[in-house]
Length: 347
Ligand SMILES: [Zn+2]
Ligand SMILES: [Zn+2]
Image (cartoon, rainbow, N blue to C red; front, top):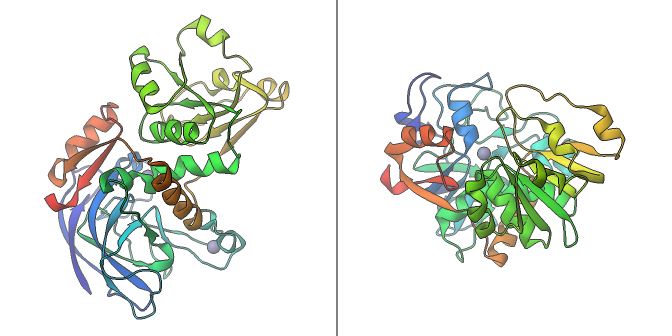
């Protein structure tokens, strides 16, 4: 076994603290990565506090991992020692169901193995995430990382990047489309950058006027304060797509009415209570409400290559490992531009 160290939550109530644990030895198809940076996703906090239920403790969160390959198994073909590599939200799946065969491992019909707070395909071995010094992953679930971009800004692409890239590609967002982004956090700021890079006209919808300058700087063309009745009138029946990244309670009917004929609202955030849908609001304009979950491995690689080519990274605030609990508190207040990333050299 490989000795690893990281930061873990021992239960839902106590802060994260140092934790020593073991990872499996490098198998024939495995890649071992020395972790350099790990992004801090809002879902890390939800899971460490067991807000979604079923949490497995001790829990080492983190699924926005970039680092350098330090060892490879005898059968590994695509990685060698010294390469940059990344790991996102999933590290294995059944590999045989129809979703897996289509490269949509995140929709595996049997079981997909989360990078942490999950169990391996054996059904019992817990997985530990990227708030740690190293990780061992099958090369099929390991991503190639370009050396063109700053690594700390690349880490959040592994979750926030792919979560927003995948629906934009699924619905073929391009020039001529009007896209609204709801919520300007980790996901939202990536949605703005990516949708703008694909040629869409991007509008940020926000309750706070203070975010306008930031939104425009990220590449948004328009900014609408949703508390301003007059501004709202101007975007009735307007958008082709709304990317909804908000995980706090909000009235989605207000936003659905901004969709034009055949427009689609894409849900990426998970509010604590199910939204109340008004059927008339959908029926009269043939509008749709859809959801989307991260992305498959092939699409994640495509996204990373796209971002390297278009010079797209996440805007980050680099923190030391010991400051993770403070970072969680600040994240709860929305006090981050736009993603915390842990510099693993500080572990
Ligand atoms: Zn995430
Ligand atoms: Zn499967």
